[in-house]
Image (cartoon, rainbow, N blue to C red; front, side, top):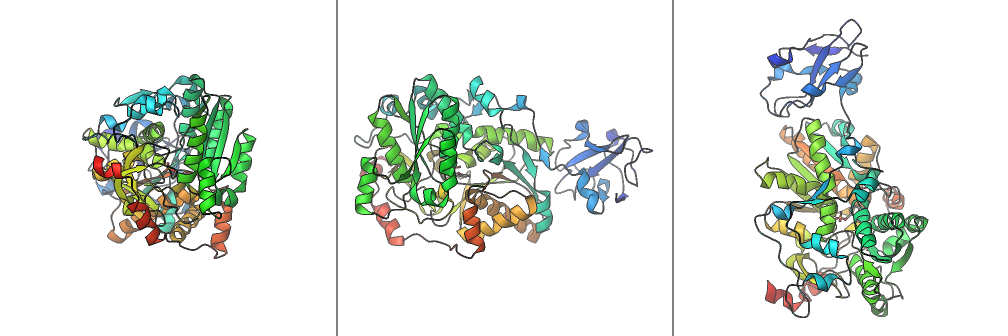
Length: 541
Ligand SMILES: Cc1ncc(COP(=O)(O)O)c(C=O)c1O
């Protein structure tokens, strides 16, 4: 083992450390080693060298506050490749630390969300309007102003299969980038289906089962959501029908197999099964489909059958709410690491993984806690937050849903068939749109190729292949880390690695073969879609 380079100066007196100048060994019984780079970053952790020479975090000293004015001279530098041995990589929590309640940011926002409107009357809808589609418990959560909503014990029981998910410090990526930034990522790919989606799938299946639902219909983009609802539906004995966007259905055949493994049915959308699907096919027989179209198909089937309800994998308040287990755990894990993020990054399709990580931190900020810079990253080929209009619009292409106020590209907008299928939605969750309007978050858009480049760089450093959607967050985090390098400032960056890409390897194959291109949407199609925003929207704005 390489020796410590040097241990210099003194650390806060109450720690009374025994400073050592060699590797931990049997004849140095208790060695305290602080690691960190400079005052600006703050100390990461204190490590205790044990009698047998092993190194472990000394709990009582593990959470020195940031910028605690401990002089830089107190930093212990450990040279050589073995330095990594003292560097914690994964911050894990025991199962009893799974949050007991979801966090509802609506309780802390300075202004409430705009109401959901009935498309016919232009008036706010009531619970009964949504009852054909959702069980009452979820409708209640959709409009709740309670800060905490208790997670039912059967849901927490199932969460135990993969939660709490780990928080990783991306030490290898930091080294590859040679950045003074500290990069952390919350890894949601450890779930049974490989993404954050089961966090809400299990909850939605639970409430549906309680309400007597027999079957749930849904849409899916890349297949992460469809397979998650299939997994959850199976656990609660529910039938699941999934309308999968055709381009993804063809790109990711094993997602269908996974859904079928859990006992669900998966159909390419637009399909001949529904009026909405047939209408699209009549006009565009080669339609690649879109989330908006698949939502129409699933909603139509649910609305026609009393024992069938509909579930959405993103966008709605209750879905974003269920994802807040991610951010709550991350706060506790960042605390374990003795750090707090300066910058948080997440990719946004409808906004659920993003809000799930970000909202608990924003809640702390809104209640007087530290300020965080929050960046939402979306695809340049479907840029609802950066190019869309903040207006009332339909959630689906067939205009079967109520009107919600959100950033939208227009409900008839069909984005090009890029690989991040989960980000191909014409709108953005009303809550995330509202956070943007309030100036609490920023947004940026990236092209497909630069995201895959970042995804490959991440995979080569950290060993995890990100889902194409997640590469957008990776790219955002890498860009921020490189800015830190340029400016010579250490910042703490946290991002949501919301899923792995094991079912998306064709996309990587295409990328390596040079067959992927940056795709841009048709400007005239966007203009047309925006011009077609419902007129009730203009009246209600
Ligand atoms: C891995 C992954 N990330 C992100 C998304 C986008 O959804 P959301 O913005 O709700 O997290 C999806 C949607 O399918 C997904 O599968």
